[in-house]
Length: 327
Image 1 (spheres, rainbow, N blue to C red):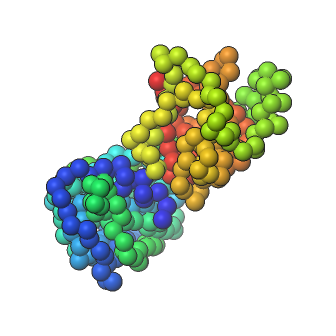
Image 2: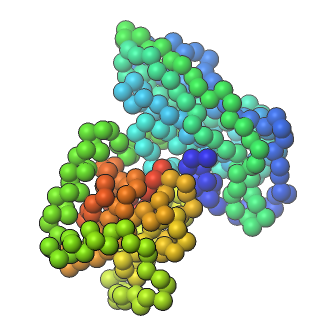
Image 3: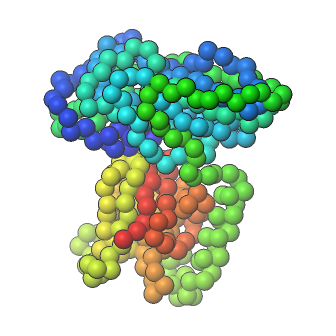
């Protein structure tokens, strides 16, 4: 299930004890809308709904939309005690995550999600993935097993006639959903050009070395690491994905990231390659090299090339692993 496990781990339940829960056969999550016809400029409202016999302490959902037709605004949850957890938002998909300190029974609306209609069009909203969260025996958030996503598509008809924009009537805490990372075909092409130019600026000997060994297996653990003074060590701070909330110092370089357990950072994600990317250092600073997977820096694609890393850069690997580079 795409991207949901990072959200669940990010919740990090450390609350009161909760018995181990199992979903019932009827447990389900679905997307719905009372109205599917709108005018340009009007607020579009859809609801994420659930039915479960188990008490939960959170939930996540990902809704795919067309950014040319719709602009996400925010979401709110009527479930008592559910608080929204802000996550980086990718253009074209809203990513909602909620958590509560106390177990809740959910049978009805989990969240209301609001969009603005940008122009006349016929488009769909698709509930790409969703999950209910419980606290496992170790006290961390875990997905409730056996929950089925049904009725995951809402067809919308937006008229080109301009309507009146209605104010959002929230029923719970505000969760912003406006995009923070933009992905378009033009930006992906532009990112590829920037990555290529960066490689051409690297010293000739270094370039040959990286091209020759770019797809080699990660070094064995017995290899002596290059030691950097503690005061100069940079870090990667994971914000989304398997290691959300954790930081990894770059005290051994090059640092390999991928699904293979031999990597320095192993990401158990089907969208991550065996050896997905690596971070290395030159006299100019730190660089990120894509090893053939899906890699983005600040929303721009890096395709089998290297790009310079500066403080605050947002790096996404695959569909869900996201970290910030910094001290």
